Image 1 (tube, rainbow, N blue to C red):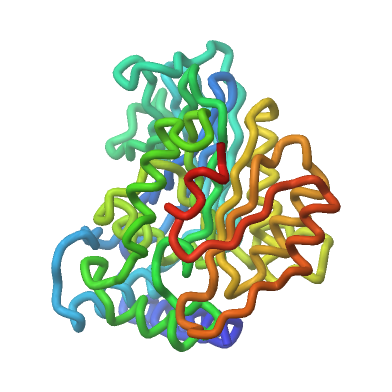
Image 2: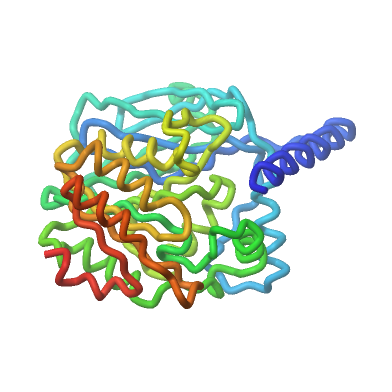
Amino acid sequence: MKWFFAKLEIVVSSLVRQIRTFIGTHGSHVVLAYTGYGNGTQIHLMGRVVEEFHPYDFTKNSLRIYHFYQVAKLFLTFKVPNKKVYIKVHEEMFEVQTNSQGFFYKTVELNDSIKTDLDEERPRVYFSLKPFYQKPDRVWPGRFILPEQKTQLLVISDVDDTIIKSRATSFLQVAFRTLFFPVSKRKTFDEASAFYKDLQKGAYTGKPGLFFYVSSSTWNIYPVLFGFLEHNDFPAGALILNDTQTKTPVTDSTLKHRHKKARIEEIMSMYPKLEILLIGDAGQEDPQLYLSIAKKYKERVRAILIRESWWHSHFVVNDEFKKMADDIGVAFHYFQDLQELSESLN
């Protein structure tokens, strides 16, 4: 079903582009910068180049029909492939080229390390479509997260059915909620935000955490999910979504959401000395995904936390996953409410 809608998006966009070409109307190009992440000497930056459109603040209350209109615009935005993007971090310059879908991904190596404790001392990142020595008219600011010196844990969380009620096993349910439910009307799990903020401070584990939200949703709805995280006061972090047509897949074909494994391993490689806490749900393939990571990196996995399927009144715990975790030597917990785990994570 996702494949069908992805193809539909391509067809509709192509048709509209041909009409606009025929009548001679084209928008200027802009950079959509996603939150990156770094370790002081490296920064992984992500973004997309598209034809200009008016951004919308999805944290605002809005009518369902207006929300639908704004989300539809995200899917019909015209991508700009093979476009060179210029990057400035402090006084260092880099460049990258967008792929066939207009996305760019770039890990930059810095000559000077970045301080990781004081936000006001961190250099900003800027993007341009012209070299900075030409003093471009338009520059787009970006941001990236860094661990603090006290950070000792990477908290890597799924989004759908882990912190937001989506029923992700049904594409139609996800599509309906995404298209017709404004951020303020989407339901979260009551305990999730407070528990995550406690993890950020080091509660339960004794290790302050740096947050990453990794989802199988497409980059098109980044503003919607980012708005949801802000509206519900989740800890600031990097939101990493799916570019299925262009990102290199993992070879393990048994994993339906195999791109998540590659993204998680990219994160782990940026912080090789930090433990990880993996949080997901039982509705899709998070248990299998996380166990495959634990098998490969068992010394680094603090625990695997799996939310039981909230829409099934008679959810049955799969003891086979627990047995697999025991064999690996990694803690594995099912939960209905994260507060149930406060003592188990010590």
